[in-house]
Image (cartoon, rainbow, N blue to C red; front, side, top):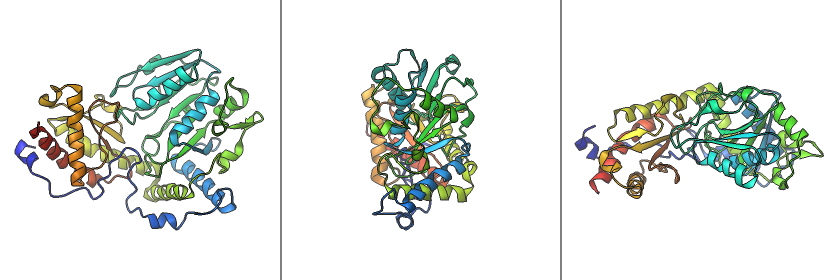
Length: 391
């Protein structure tokens, strides 16, 4: 696109301009009325029908994601963060542990392991935003904690082939922006977590905790020498608290959020299940990447194509006039683009994460329509041209 063309405001806008990386856009055709009609509002979550609905959410999750029958699935408090924290505080310390971090959420788990849990044999393997750490250096005999898809950096692991099987260790995977969009290798994962507000566009505050038989065995055989808050306790008298994985939550869930999550699951199933969800995310990302490849001012933050996320796509500005600015100036420029698009109603919430390099982050998960991604791209060019002209 020429400079003159970019300066002309596009005439068409995305039908759904929400491109937030969490809470993410609602599914196409979503209606609050459809959600309310199936929600048990004003009811105890421990009553027969609401508890059955919680169990329904668990089993539909299993069906769509292809989670093995002998894995336990629980609904837990505090979103994905709560689910990861429950696993780390309850299970780590029995063996050495390797912590992988290449963006802010992985870095947060490192902080917990090193500064809060103060694990004795804890090795941190890091990489900067847009890259992956040295996966080959992971110890085969150590517990492992990693984020499958770096929500704030746009970098993901391509597969789990690098994880060597060892029945003595557990692998904890934060999959919050990967589940329903990327092919998780359940045989390699012992603890998997995600939140409703990511790929399925659900409401916040609820997390999913998925345990392999090996993870259950760790819980039942290892009692860490540390206090555990009530919402972290997954066992009773040395045995797994099975009720959590049958729809009896530790604290009170929002039944409106439960109904909303099931609404998204039903939509995913009707669309063709996991295969269709991954295909939608891939198509959205391909449409955006095609524009990136033709752009003279934007690049994908992740240089290696096989490591690029198909959900949280992160962009950096490479125009020489902008890269010549200091970090504060680059951040201000990116924020100007975000502000212009927000004011026009062309795109909401596409700013890069606060700890990430200056740039943009555009959600391309399954609930986004490809046509909206394609309608967004000329607006990106327009906003860049306007922001640059104002320098």
